[in-house]
Length: 134
Image (tube, rainbow, N blue to C red; front, side, top):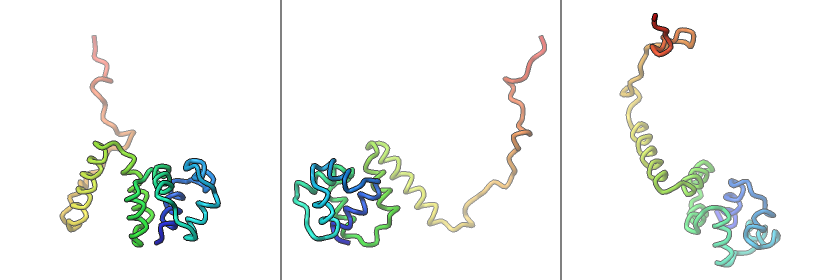
C-alpha cells in the first residue's frame, strides 16, 4: 500500500473529509487529493501535520503503508490504543494477552457454569428490602 493510500485509509477511519484534513493541516484539498492518489508526496512538515491531525505517529502511518495485510479492524484498534492514557494502554495490553491465552486453549478446557440464572421475576428478595416486624 502506498503512503497516500495509507493516509486516505486512516483519514476515512477517522471520518474526516479531505476539506476537514486540509483545514486541520493548513494545506489545500487538491494537494491532499494528489497525495492520496499517489501523484504527489507530502513534505516532511506536512506529513507531521497529517499525522497529528489523524492522531497517529509518522511511524504508525508508515507501518500501515508497509503492511498490506493490516485489516481495518487493526487500524481502528491502533487508533484507539494511541488515544488512550498510558495506564489504560497497559490495561488493554494485559487484556489482549488474556484473550490470546484463552484463544490458545482447547475449547474443551473452558469451564462454563450450566446452572440457569433466575429470571427477573424470580429474583431472591434482598434482606434490606424486607420489613421486619416492630
